[in-house]
Amino acid sequence: MIKKLAKSIREYKKDTILTPTFMVGEVFMEMLIPFLLGKLIDKGIIEGNIKIILILGAVLVVTALLSLFFGVSAGRSAAKASSGFSKNLRQDMYEKVQKFSFYNIDKFSTSSIVTRLTTDVTYIKDAFMSMIRGAVRSPLTIIFSFIMAFVVNPKIALIFLAVAPILGFLLILIAKKAHPIFERVFYTYDDLNNVVQENVKGVRVVKSFVQEDYEVQKFEKISNSIYQDFSKAEAILAFNNPLMQFFIYLIITLLSWFGAKFIVAGNMTTGEITSLITYAMSILNSLMMLSMVFVMIIISGESAKRVVEILDEVPDIADPENPIMEVKDGSIDFENVSFSYVKDENKLCLKDINLKIKSGETIGIIGGTGSSKTTLISLISRLYDVTKGELRVGGENVKNYNLKVLRDQVSVVLQRNELFTGTIKDNLRWGNKNASDEELVEACKLAQADDFIQGFPDKYDTYIEEGGTNVSGGQKQRLCIARALLKKPKILILDDSTSAVDTKTDSLIRKSFREKIPNTTKIIIAQRISSVEDCDKILVLDHGEINGLGTHEELLKSNEIYRDVYESQMKGEEDGEEKTR
Image 1: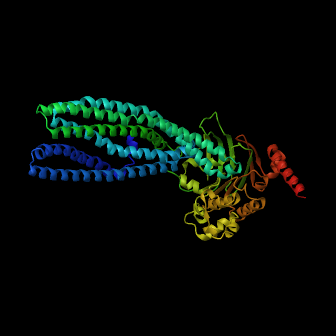
Image 2: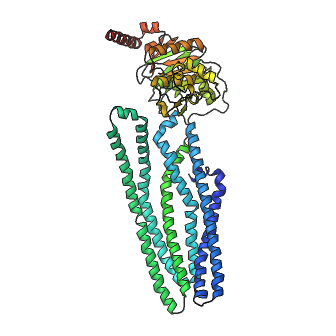
Image 3: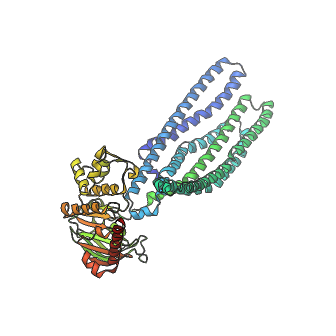
C-alpha cells in the first residue's frame, strides 16, 4: 500500500528527502543548546568568567540560528513535499476514475469517491507530513537527548530509561483505543456527502414537496453521528496531556531530588541539572509528538486503504493490444447477446438478443419500465461489455475497437441529460472542441435548439448554471442532442432524449434527421409511439427479451404489447381533445 501511494511523490522526491535531512540538523543543534547552556552556567556565570560567557554566548547564538535555519528549511520542504504529494495523489485518483467503466463506477458511490478525493487525501497528506517531519524529529530528539543525558551524568540519566518506556507504552495504548472510532467516521463521511449531494442537486424537488425539515433532520442525524464519534475519540486522546504532565512533573521531581543530593555531594553541578531537566522535557515532548504521529498514521491508514481501492480498481473495459482505429459504417449486429450487471449468467437483464441493423436505418425501441432499453444501447458504445454473445459495429466486434474511436462514432444522448457550468458554446464543444461557430449553429438547427438560443440576450454565449438549472428540460435535451450531433457520428442514439419536448418539436427533430443525416444510423428510445412510428423498424422489449420487431403497421397487427401502448396513448389523446372542447 505504501509503495502504491509513494508513486504519487514523483517530482517531489527531492523535498521529501531534504525534509528529514534538515530535521537531523535542527535536532542536533537543539540538543547542543542545553549542553552549552549548562557549561555557560558552570564555567561562566558561577565562576564569573566573562570571556567564557562571551564565547559560549556567541556559540549559543550561532547554534540557535542554525537550528532556526534548519527548522524553517524543513518546514518549507515538508509543506512543498506534502502538498505536491497530495496534488499528485488526487490527480492519479481522478484520472483512474475517468478510465472506469460504468461497472467500475457502480462499485463506488459518487459520494464515496468525492470523500476519497477530498477528506481521505487530506488525512493522507497530514500523515505524510507527520512522517517526514514528526516521525523523524521525535525519535532523533529522544535518541540525542538520551545520549546527551548520559554524557552529562549517566546515573541520573537512568531515570529517563525507567520512566520514558512506560509513558511511551501508555501513549500508544491510548492511540490504539481511538483508532477504531476514527475508522468508523470515514464511512459516516460518505453518508454525509451523499446527503449533501442529493439535497443540493435535488433542491427544487425538496422545496416543491416542502421537505426541508425532513432533509435538515436527516443531515442532523448523520452530523450528530460524526460529532459523537469524534467526541468519543477526542475524549480518549484527551488523556495524553494530563498523562504527559504527570510524567513531566514526576521526572522533574526525581531529577530535583537526586540532583540536589549529587550537587551537595559534589558529583553534579547546577548547569548539569539544568541541562538534564531540559533533556527530560525534550524526551517527554517528543514522546507526546510521537504518539500524535502514531494517531495520525492510524487515522490515515484507513484513508490510505480507501484511496488504494480506487487506484487498484482495474477498469473492466480497456483498449485491446492492437485496436481498430476506424469504424467503417453504422451497421450493428447483436448475436445471441445476454447481459448481467453483476456478471452473473443467472441474473441476466438482457437475454439472447439477436438483432441486425443496417447502416443508415432508423430504429425505434419501445418497452415498459425495466425492460432494459437503456441497457441494450449502453452495450453498443461499450459503456458495459456483453456477458454472453457478440456485438458488432461496422462488422467488427466492439471489443476490437479503440474506445475513443468507437465512442466518437457511436454518439449517445443518455436518459439523464447533463450540462456543465460554462457557456452554451462550451457545452456544445464537448461534442467537438474544434467545431466552428457555423457548425454549432448547424447542429443546433438540426436539434431544433437554435430558435430558443437566439432568444437569449447573449445567444450562444449564454452562461449555463451548474447542471443546466437555468434552462428548461426540453431545452436541455435539445442542447444535448446538438452536442452529440457535433461529433458527426456514424451511429446516433437518443435514449428517451425528446421526452421533455412537445410532439411538434419532436417531429421536426426526426424530420431534420431524415433529411440532413440520412446515412447515420439512428436509434430512438421513446415512450411515445408518435416518436417512433415512422422508423424503419421498431423493437419491442419486454423483461430484457425481444417481444416484437417490425414496422409500425406490422406491429399493430402482430404485437399485443405495441398495440396496447398505441391504443392507450391514442385514447389519452382523444380524451384530452374532448376536454379541451
